[in-house]
Length: 108
Image (cartoon, rainbow, N blue to C red; front, side, top):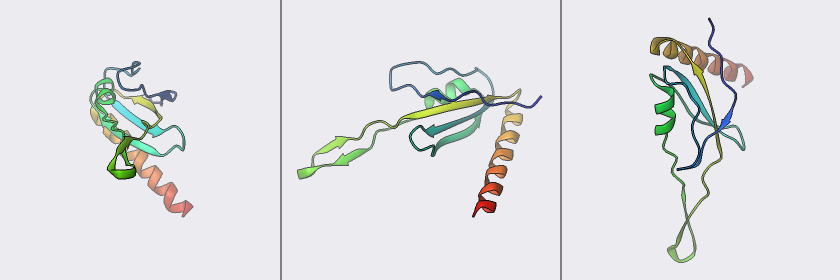
């Protein structure tokens, strides 16, 4: 059976909301909701724990007279692809990376 991706879901803000992901091996992808840029991608043993551990630190902006203000948290989305084993997840991730690199080499 070929694994498939879930729908894109909003990544919860710090301390608010829940992450909907299976407790098992698979691949996750996190992107910036505004422009679609890739934020994180990995194969893991436990999707729920891996997504919960992702560190999203707000950037600090320098202001006048050395005062620092925090930039807003990035607006992120995530999706998961569950697999039967971690080996399957690694193999699928390698295949996806290879397909992406092939596409970019042809587009350039």
